[in-house]
Length: 390
Picture 1 (cartoon, rainbow, N blue to C red):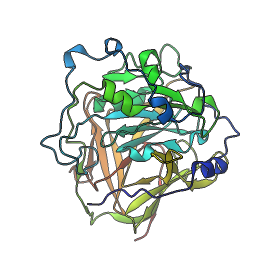
Picture 2: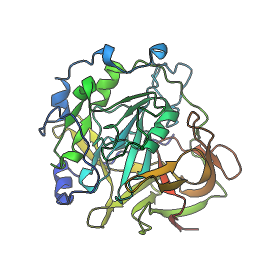
Picture 3: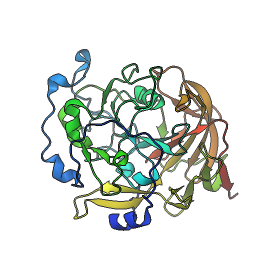
Picture 4: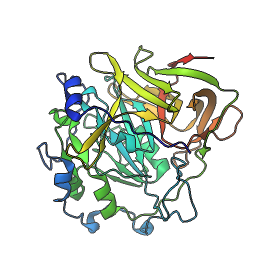
């Protein structure tokens, strides 16, 4: 079985020196409760976190139960990897910042699945929605505000949804979290605020400094049942596609006219895709993520590598002058990049209450290589740029 390889990178200090944080981005500043306004590490603050009062947890009374133990499952439903005996399925979805000033993000490389969306109409940035299940990181972030289409994705997973709540610039017509079908969500307010904290290691711009103590929150509060979905993907170690085309790079434009704003490069020796993106100076560089560790720095700075890449074409429209509307119900085209081969297919989702199904061109469920999967939510009016090698 092919396992994801974490590659050692440069230090946090090196990253800060390489990153241009002199320019504030144009995204909204979330209205949040500040628990701590210092650059203390998450480890220092976790020990002081008081337990959440169970009476104030917005959990559906009728559905409270122990999280299901995957006794009969030997493979993860999110990565296809072997799981330890009696593993518990506890998916957590977190909205993660991707402004240039927020990079490198913390714990992205521990996510099983990462969705990447174009953000608002006035912003050429993207934003992540990361799904954690196999491994729950101690800390994750920077966390940002929700969008209606992030909530629409969270509905199909049925797990915990973490964000900073509704965007503050939204008018009364914008769909709120309270109006969504998200089963259980937390934001930086009430007792849940005890699990959010400020970290200014990367930047002092406050809108990019809010992090979440994920594992501590889950251990104290995640007691409702989530049933794993088995029909979203199939996994097969060493999967090959004879009708697929060999490729070297995949350029992702999102909302920009630049067809290679984000680039995934196939590393044949490691059988992984390496992600690169452009910084605030429009310079393409290898994307990085900080993985929480127990060493002196508290982080390991590693390149972002991906096992499977899905480009999901979606209908994107204007909701108003600020926000977008992205339709995640219906069907559309897909491109899959798996083990160095590109192959076409489709996605479909009959309703928000159902999961998205990913199929190949012949109508069969796509088979992924066990490991992480990134799903790029690409406007159907844009074309990706693939460099084929055969």
